[in-house]
Image (cartoon, rainbow, N blue to C red; front, top):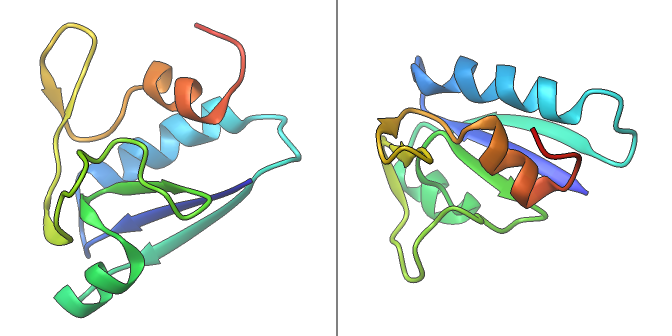
Amino acid sequence: MLVQVLTVPDCPGGPVVEERLAAVLAGRTDVTLQRRVVDTAAQAEQWGMHGSPTVLVDGHDPFAAPGAPASLSCRLYRGADGRAQGAPSARQLRRVLGGPPD
């Protein structure tokens, strides 16, 4: 499985998603993690970025709404409690990446 993290420069959600992914992927040998900094709208379109941070799983954004346009904007994710946060929760990441529940 290929997991890519796409961020804009200095994205505050970038370190948060990296930390959560490290915890979720700990001990997994079936996952390759790549990071990419996106600087232009053309790059966002090319790589399928729907706001920063974007997590792609095998080239697909499992958190994007169907038909969502590419974007260099900050991205918010809704937690289980309905509050917005700057990165998907560990639970949301486990759901899309597989692994043991919380």
